[in-house]
Length: 323
Image (cartoon, rainbow, N blue to C red; front, side, top):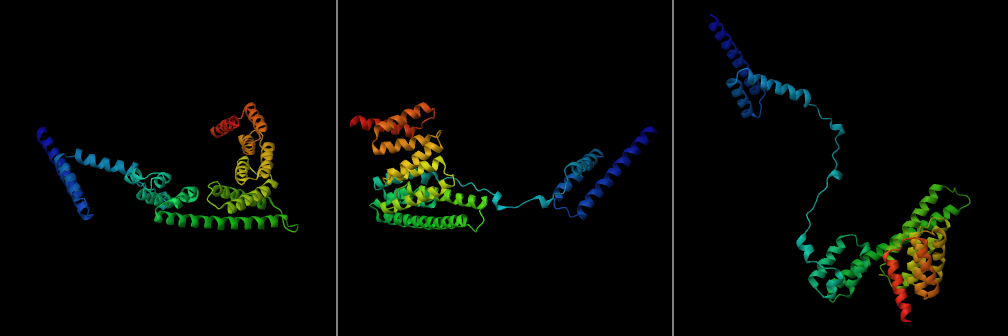
């Protein structure tokens, strides 16, 4: 009697299991589940493993919906192309076959020179004007013509930008000095910012020596005028004074360079440019005693000298020894 009762219970469990499995399969069919193969496999597992199969899938479904099934708030999602970064593989073959423009011109390698010219102008050429100017001496007429076109275009843009900045600075200076106008810290800050920009843009081109001597001197004078206006606002940095001293020495204006070298020593006594400005000045004018004194002052000051300064000291000493 007990065995028969257990058999009835087993049959009941199997029937219930079959009914639940069929209901699940019917539910998947009515829902038009795209992954019918997966639902069929679950149905087979439920039949082959009664009760345990159903309980396994049920608790798996329950666990997923409790801990992982959450709605995504699309309001917090930002789709922006600015977040996409495309990494382009370097063209190793092209870069391996290119040489510096100076070397390509020296060996009259037309293929390398033309290829390198194209690579240079694709980038920001503002710092490569002196290199492009070398192409004007190339025996390849195509390279020389292309270099001249690019250089002329870059210098035209430079002149236009400088003229605009100079006009803007003069207008801001006039408004600031107007007795009827309001003098504000914001206006003064905007003016000095533009003066800083002009000095640095002028220096970036002047240091490459791609202008004619007359035009080079003209823009150095404009750079000096801008620095004078900036100095009146006590806003010239030691680096800008050093730039100006270098450009003034290049056009042979030792007097103006002396003014800025003295100002640099006064305003920035602990900065290396305060010493190097005078060292370059005395080196250019050949004042040996003043150079030696400035060199001793630099050594005693504790200000670390860079490689360029040490090289200048060595060259000056060698030149004086030859005399």
